[in-house]
Structure formats: structure tokens, C-alpha cells
Length: 180
Image: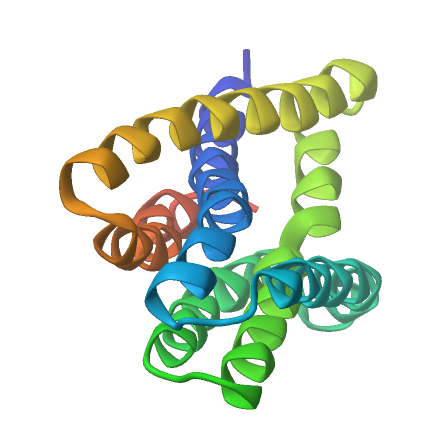
């Protein structure tokens, strides 16, 4: 029971981060091909860059969190990724790749950190904590992507990407109040 409040806040934070991650993965190819008039063969490279940088971010986030604090790294990740996504949306060519890679690195930076935080809230049920963090975040991320698909149908892919860009900031109020 003592884990209910902090775990709920953490899960809300993670769900919004997952909406961002999966939303970007889903809509970046459409944006790159239709809006930036990029080569369809390079759209996959853009996703590869985003996800590879995110993988590197996962490895960097853990040791950094051990030094400066898990909550600080989580808040930095959520706060810093939004301006980088904005820079991605305002650029093209090499700079679009650069800003998206950096945004992926920073956004996914907090993945391993959030896992450790969740397990610390439920030290006698780390399997359940891991399942909630992984299962709920990806499940809700997929559901969120379906909702974002509705937005894309109504308002277009560029507008939807602008909405996705600010989802990490929407998770900051939840993250701030996590007692960690």
C-alpha cells in the first residue's frame, strides 16, 4: 500500500514518456517523407538513428543517475527532450537527424532509471514492479499511439508531432511529486 502513491505517479510519468517514444517512432517516417520531402529510403535511417541513440541513452542514464540522483535524471530527461524535439521539427537535412538523435538519447535516458525507481518502491515485488513498468508503459504507449493516429487523421501529421513533442512536459508534474 505504501507503494501505491509513488508508483502511480511514476507510472503516469512513464505512460506519457512511452506515448512520446512510440508516437515519434510511428509518425516520423510519415513526417519525413510527406512534410520534409525526404527520400523514403532514408526514413528508416532516421528511425534507426533515434532508436540507436535511445539505446546509448539507456546505458548512460543509469550511471549518471547513480551519481546525481534518479529523480534528477528523470526530470532532466523529460524537460530537455521537448526543446530537442522542437529543434527537430524546425530543421531539415543533417540537422533533423542530429536533433532527433539527441532527443532520442535524452528521452530514453530515463528508461533504466524509471525501472530502478519502480523496483525500489516495491522491493519485495520487483517482478510485479518490472511488469507494471514495462507492460503498462508499452501497452498504454500503444493505446496512446492509436489516439495520436486519430489526431493525425483529423489535423495532420505535423500537428500531431507538435502535440507529441510536448507530452514529456505534461509528465513533469507527475514526476516532480514522486517521493524519491
